[in-house]
Image 1 (cartoon, rainbow, N blue to C red):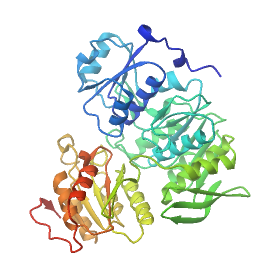
Image 2 (cartoon, helix red, strand yellow):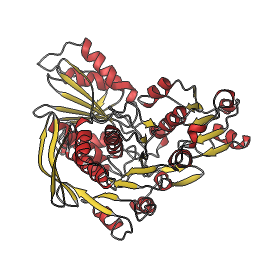
Image 3 (spheres, one colour):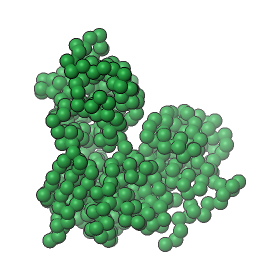
Image 4 (spheres, one colour):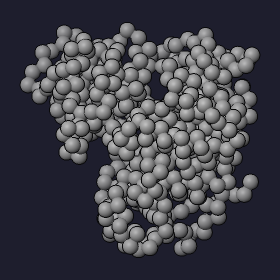
Amino acid sequence: MTPNRFLEVPKGDNMKHIHLIGICGTGMGSLAGLFKEAGFQVTGSDTQFYPPMGDQLKAMGIPLMTDFDPKNLEKKPDIVIIGNVCRKENPEAVRALELGVKYYSLPQALQEFFLKNKKALVVAGTHGKTTTSSLLAWVLTDAGLDPGFMIGGVGLNLEKSYHLGKGDFFVVEGDEYDSAFFDKGPKFAHYRPAGAILTSIEWDHVDIYPTFEKMIGAFEKFVGTLSDKAPLLAWADSPKITELTHIHNYPLFRYGLKQGHYTAQEIQFSPEGTSFKLCFDDQQIPLSTQMCGKANLENSVAVAGLCHQMGLGWEKIAHGLKTFKGVKRRQEIKGVVKGITVIDDFAHHPTAIHCTIEALKERFKNRRLIVVFEPRSNTSRRNAHYDAYLKAFKGADKVILAPVYHPENIPEAERLNTAKLADDLMKRGIDAYAIDGTDFIIEFIIRGIGPNEVVAFFSNGDFDNIHQKFLDKLDRRKIFEDKKQVRSIKIRS
C-alpha cells in the first residue's frame, strides 16, 4: 500500500499550516486531530469550546481562537477547512475565500488526505453511529490491525476520536448532514467505502431536509457509492432500509435481533452488560458486551457481522466486543454521590431518547429514573417530532424539560413548546415539568430526590455543564429520605 502522503509532510519552517473554521464540532475536532498527528501545524476558531471536543483540542495543544474573525487569518494558512457551521456570510470564511487560500469541506479533506490509500469502513444511519463506529474501531484495534479512525465522539478504550493508523482500514462515522455552504451534498457521499453499516433511517436534520423523502435521497446517494465488492450490513427491521436496498450490486447482509443474515439469540441482559449467541448460517457464536439495551445489542451484531465479512476471526471479534467500555456521553456515568447516579447522554432525537431510557431502566433495575432533556439540536428545537416526544419519555419516572436552546433562532411557529409538552406528558401519566434555567433545574431535582435514584441528562451540547454543577451541589447538600416541598422555583407543569 502506498504510504499516506501526510506522513511525508516536511517539518520545521516548511511545515504546512492548516486552519479549521468551526473546529469544535465533533467531526472538525477529530479532523484537526488527524492533521496534528500527521505532522501539520494546526490552528482553529469557533464561538465556544465545550467538552468533550473542547477539552480534546486543548489537550492537543492546538492554538484556538474564540469567535469567527478575519483577523484569525492574518497569518495566512496554506489550507483552510470550513465547517458546515459556517454560512456563506461568515466573516472568517469570506476572508479565506478573498485570500485565495485552498479550502475544503470536512468530508472533502478527509477523503483527499486520509482515505485515498485506505479501506474505508463507514457507519451510517440516524441512530447509533458514534457507538457503532467506536466499537468497530476498537475491535479492529484490539485485533492488532491499527486502523485509522475519525469518529464524532470519544471511545473510552480509544481515548480520542481520531487516529491516523498504520493499518489498511480506516473507520469513519458517516454523517448525512450537509458538508459546507459550498458543498451541499451529504458528508458520507464522499467516502467510497470498502465496507459499511447502515443502522437506521428516520427523519432528522429538519433544517436541511424539510421532508423525510429529501433525507431518503441522501441515503440513496450513500448506498450508491458502494462498489460491487463492498459489503453492506443493513438493519433488517427497517422497512425504509429494506426498500432502499431492495435492488443492489454490492454484497448485502441484513442484521437484527430476530431476522437477517446475522441475528442474536439466547439474549441475557444484566447490569454488567449483555450476553448472546450470534447466529450466521449454521454457526452460533457466544458473544458478550459491557453495553446495555437492545439498540447497543443491535450495534454489536452489526459490528460483528462487518468484521466477519472483512475477514476477522470470531475469537478476535469476541474479545473486542467483550472489552469495549463504551463512549463518552453515551450512557456515561459522570459520578455517584450519596448513592445517586448521574448519567450524561447525547440523546436528542425521540427514538434515541426512548432507546436510552429503555437501556437505563434495564441497567438500573428497580431504581427511579429522572430524565432531564435540553432541546438543543436543530431538529429537537423544532416541533416536527412533537408527537414522537410524547412517546419517547415512556419509562422515565420524572421528566424535566429545559428551555429550548437559543429559541430566537427558531421561528415561533416551528419552535418546540416545552410547557405544552410537559402538560401533555402529564396527561399521559408521566410526571413532567418545564423548568427555566440550570440553577432552577438543579434545585428542583435535589429538593425532591430520594436515595438510590438515577438522574440522566440528555443534550447534544454542553448543557451549561449541568452534570458537574449537579454533582457538586449534591455533594454539599444533605439529602433527607422525606422529600422536601419544592418552593419558589420557576417551573411550569
